[in-house]
Amino acid sequence: MTDPQAIAELTRELAVSGLCAVAALFAIAGTIGVFRFPDAYTRLQASSLTGTTATFSVLAASLVASPSIAIAARVVVIVIFFLVSNPTTTHIIARYAWKSGLDPWTDSARRRGRGEDRP
Amino acid sequence: MRPRSLWKLIRILATFAVLIALWFLFSGSFSPASILTGIGCSALIALISYNTFIDEHEAARNMVFPRLLPALAYPFRLVAAMYAASFRTLASVLSGRVSPRVVHFRSRLKSDIARVALAEAITFTPGTISIELDEDHFIVHWLNATTRHSARAGDEVKGPLEAAIKRIWV
Image 1 (cartoon, chains in turn brown, yellow):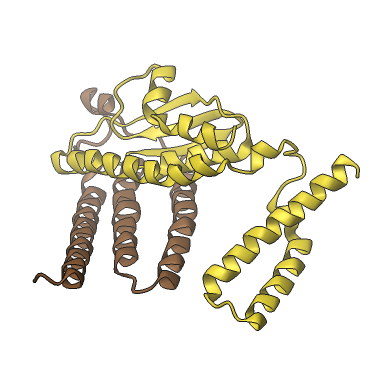
Image 2 (cartoon, rainbow over the protein chains, first blue to last red; image 1 turned 180 degrees about the vertical axis):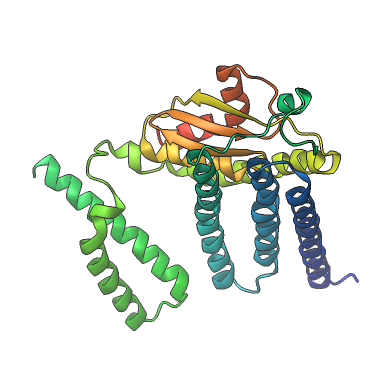
């Protein structure tokens, strides 16, 4: 294992696996959060863990794994479109909930004994 | 040349530059036929769509065109902020303890594009979602709120990203 090319290849594979592991961690945590959190807004926050962080980690992994500059450039373009489009969809859902008059859950509502009792 | 038609020419050229850059990124080839097709199609699309791509009323040029160096550094800061916020949100998912609150605050940013960029950055970092953006007034849902004071909440939610965006646009 003294060949520099083999070492570079190994480092790259380790980075790709690490990023995929991070993506899996955040995807699972986001899914748990969607079931665990009390109302639409907080569930949206949990799902943004899956939708943003996990997706971005997979894209970063594919950027590291891409075999040529041309493909890496395309991944960069996908990342830029993702940076613009992903917050927009989350914002639309939150805005619709807000416009339709959905009251956000607060921990003080739980203390007063009304609203949801889940954490 | 009158300022109005100069501004029109600049808008057409900027649209053309973005289109041709995307063409080279997606095609990935530099053969003469590909370059000629790209220039022709980009010019045609730029002439048709420059008015939608860059609005006429944003007449100050530094309100539309980003400053290059801060614009290149900004994505890295955004991604760092996103991972930091993700780990905090991960902790509150696992512990199940949240104190969500809707906070209102204002921004110092002047141009529309900078305000939209800040709203996108707020939504992009897990733990905060921008619900409404009206001129410079933000309504944000904040998962782990520490304060109800609007100016302090604004400082904590926006973090260093507002200053970073202010260096790119105005």
